[in-house]
Amino acid sequence: MHDGPVRRYAAVVALAMVASGCALGTTNDDAETLRTTTTYPWPHESAVMTSEVVVAEVVVATALSRFAPAAQNCHAHYRYDPATPEARHDKAASPGDDPDGGQRSAEFVCEIQVDFNKADDDEYGVTIELKVRYPLRAVVDELDAEINGHVRSAVAAIVSDYFTAAQRRSESTVLTGSPRYGIHRTGWLYIDGAATLANDGIYSVELPSHARDPGATTSPSYLRTLNYDLHTGQQFFLTDLVEDRVDARAALFRAADKATPNRDLSAWPVDVDLADLREQEFSLTEDSIVLRCIRYCDKGIAPVLFLPGPSKIEVSYTRLEGHLDPGGPYRHIDDRVDS
Image 1: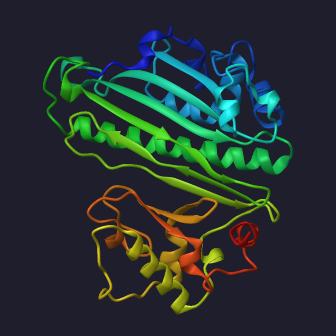
Image 2 (image 1 turned 90 degrees about the vertical axis):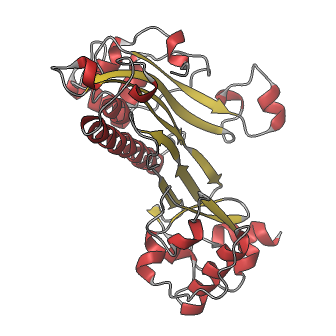
């Protein structure tokens, strides 16, 4: 069992209370009101979980509480990473010093002891460690709150999918070693979410993960990506970035192939349809479209691009010149690329 940082923290009873809709004296109605209408200050990075944080992150906390007794160890806080290198080295820096820059995120670190079969702890007892980090926008208007809600829901869905897979694997596998802490009795889920692009027109989020089911030698990973046009308030997809032409979709495939080391798919037939393009997970940076896929990739414009194992492929906008829709979300990037 690898040491987890959760051992350094005391048990947080409030997390378990979230599952039943209450948090340190709040009623269900109070919790819903706080969650949907309150703009919380961004505390210093070292601040511990408070009742306000539990309520604000109730969607993720509830997902994490699926198998968690009140006595389990868990720690959560907000983080703030300033935008500039100078600010990062300034230990006194806080969100209030840079309201328009940097990246804010919520972070949970938990160690959950689970008995998937209550009758036989020796056979089914496992330990699962979770490190979950995801970005949050400072709430200035309803769109910020809506986007944060979508990000929280995506994180909660990943946690739920992992717990379901881990339970199925544990219940169908003969687990060896000491109960709880044997090498085959441990699992983990690490979600390292980030906003890869956050300018005045686009907000792009990726939620990649690394996972291991208890008792497994290999496990699937989990992934969500979310991209928003802040001027229209709408989520967008690759079909909104790439022009609606067969040659434009083929250009994206060929550019991704060229960006992949030790790979030559020049002879591969290209037939990228709109459904595959819309389904493709991606995030954006200042200079690239980043195509992403889970381990054992099985969807998107061409799973073969991600074999035998790259989790992302960066395609610079310059490689797609003439194929990106100037009237779509790319308009929020085009000026910066040209400058």
